[in-house]
Image 1 (cartoon, each protein chain N blue to C red):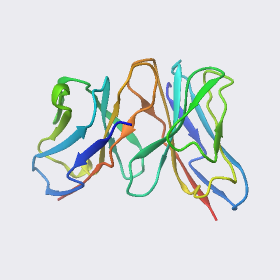
Image 2 (cartoon, rainbow over the protein chains, first blue to last red):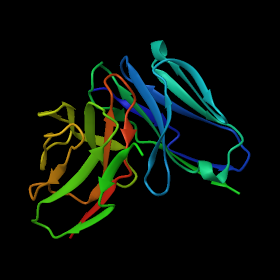
Image 3 (cartoon, each protein chain N blue to C red):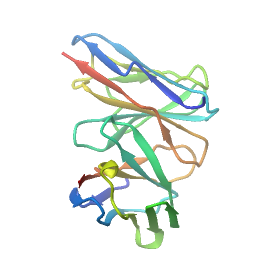
Image 4 (cartoon, helix red, strand yellow):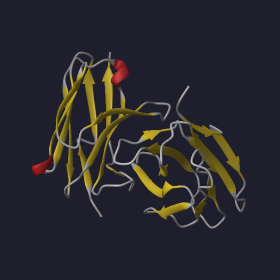
Length: 110
Length: 111
């Protein structure tokens, strides 16, 4: 099946810093989503971005489908940004499930 | 209020007992999914259903069973055959070819 690799696995930053999280995938995809999992385990949809660039406030994402990677940018980090960020992809159409990476654990220190 | 409801939030069972986790959605989504998450790991797909009365195995279906008798409901049974059932279980739903949306999860502990 499709492989998803996220880097870095862990990231510790000071409040106000910027960060870039990367997601590499092994095959073409028609669905790519970025999620934030908070300390209570809740998965929050950040972006649905199989290709192109999107922005939402301090967060933005870019997927270069032809080169099989996606980037999540977080600017002016806040302590509430802490948690685990997951990239997940789906190769085909229809309703097959997403394949998740192992995540990037982000800690923002005050 | 539309959404995906998983219950209970925490569940404790003795080894050897079957246990059923509930997942209900009122979003009118056709597809529903069950994932398992272990500490420090990503999510792994257990089962999914694209339509009522139909479902497919995911990557780690052994020791689990599901049913899809209604569009709104997709319960997951963790059977005694599942060797390591203690985990965080997440249910999701989506329209066809659209993003997945997740419930808040059920933490199952088996001792």
